[in-house]
Length: 237
Image 1 (cartoon, rainbow, N blue to C red):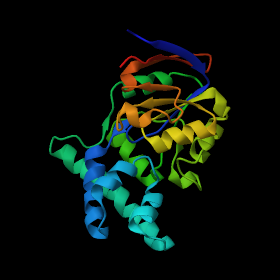
Image 2: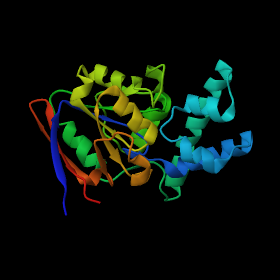
Image 3: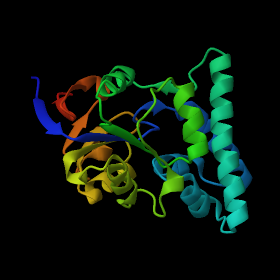
């Protein structure tokens, strides 16, 4: 049975990897390299690293603390993701691709005369600026990256920064996330949270405080009017 909910908000705040675009093959290939270099448990890294800033992953998993080494490791890691994605796409395989219904939803939001959405990602600006056009994602009014915050997800700072950039109240926003760390960040910020099962199972996302959980964004539609977004959500499995 269809379980449809509707809510009206001032703005949408989207995570990037796993929410708007699928970077899994390229990210996994990059982590395989780092797992060999730093003798890591690849399964455990892939299970817990998604949605966390690269700089924090380099500290937590690779034990890198020197600021210069950290900067270089982050640049290498994120540069490798884009390179891997481009090589996969050149071979006719999936590299960085927009997830279901994402392009239609974002293009519709861009019809608003005032900004009604932003991307809030744990990636750096360098990576995000390369990944978004590679996946064909429309230009966002505001892009908040790891470079814009001092504390990454699950801390609320990233989404609070996104709302501030749009000059809107965080409580009048919906955060769209695919990872537990991002869901926790959105919940802690005071926003409403829509979780998508595009990188984690429904069971992994339940109990974290999300207001809605959907299979993917094909279960969501938007209507934009007078600088606000009417969001219709189909929560059926």
